[in-house]
Image (cartoon, rainbow, N blue to C red; front, side, top):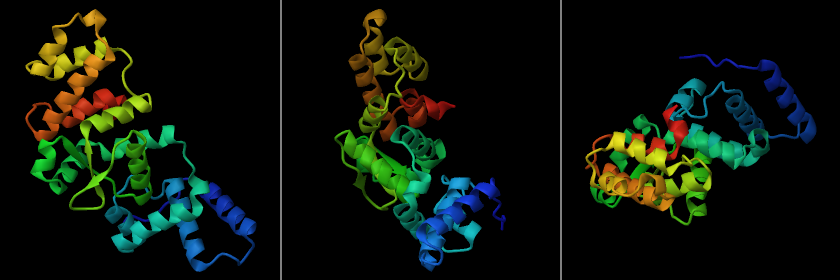
Length: 240
């Protein structure tokens, strides 16, 4: 078992003491204190927020179900200690949930029919990150879909592309995206159609349509190159 080690013990201790004083010494319940310590452990990085519930549970010697409850209730009670702007939260969440490894794991929990319909299985174990991801989907006019597991969200590729657009992550130069698509899938009909147009006059609508079509094919498994490389065009931070 890997022992817990604080990255900044002084900051952890100061914040813990500050909160117990603000609330009144002795007024916090055992559960309040437990949740406070947990949120501070994740804020410090002693427990990696991107770690699976199973891995984080092993660090604390509790069950994954209890660890999930700590994550859910901890941020509901002490969110102000780990406040994060949406512009910072979404890239952090997507870097974890859209990793190639995580996409492969999520694919086991979505039906073949859903894949054919362009739905990508995205596994989000951290309850607070899942709530943020669900809200981001709702904010672009789509709905999160669940099939076999409440930690796995089925989301269409074009919904992810709308997320990238809304939050300003897309490459601003459509010509540059067209050139990357040519490298990624040179034999694809969608890329050939795109490149038949005057590349100097390409608009984002042209590139978006090609990306969405290629994304749907990649999700269904009919495009070589995989989903992750296409997603990295929409979310450049995934390729870092």
